[in-house]
Image (tube, rainbow, N blue to C red; front, side, top):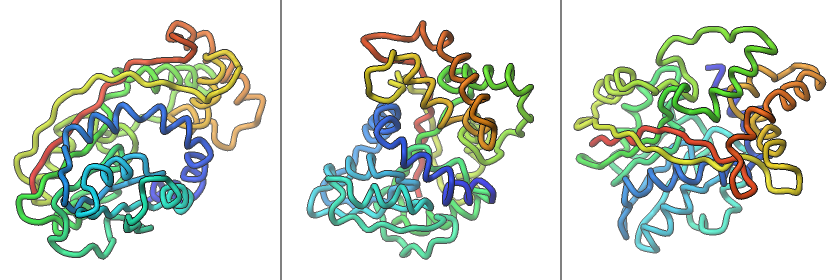
Length: 277
């Protein structure tokens, strides 16, 4: 449950402070997921782990005034941003853990999540709760990261962290975290044991634009974000400022080869996971 409490506290606050950079960085993943979901006018959609509401607003625009969107997240800081986001007017926001949230039964035509599905300590009962909230035959589209080695935005900072702090502690497949669903043999039985059917997945290759807007050189802007958000940021939490600065300096030359058009643009690989309730 540590991951849950981090999202409800310090991690959620950090993501909220970096909202603009993360909206930009994660937009291609959200767009790919929403294309796969293809929400239709009049549908009722549940957005799991809605964060600051970027995907929620996209769903609202698709379902229109005859539809309804419910968005759930455990971070009060991110939900405050989502509630204030243009395009999210009329959304029902729920603050809490979706694993235990009292969701109405058979109320939703579709379930969507952009990177909100991999953090449950007990994923099978959590997804069983979500499935009960969907109408029979309703569709789910979940976006998850593939393995870290295919995602240099994470792998490069993680390697820099290992140089500065020593090897990271090994994590068993399926352990809650951003790469928990990197392998189908992890997420497929979770969804099937929760009652979902027709579980299928496809790889999607995207490009992430990383960093804050500003006049500093692109690699420095990207390094600043990657030391606050992501696997290196987790290792730097609680470390002294000089070590954080050393991490930034170590990252900048590693990110420089990815600079294009004034931004760090890095390849990434995600799963688009589809299932039926």
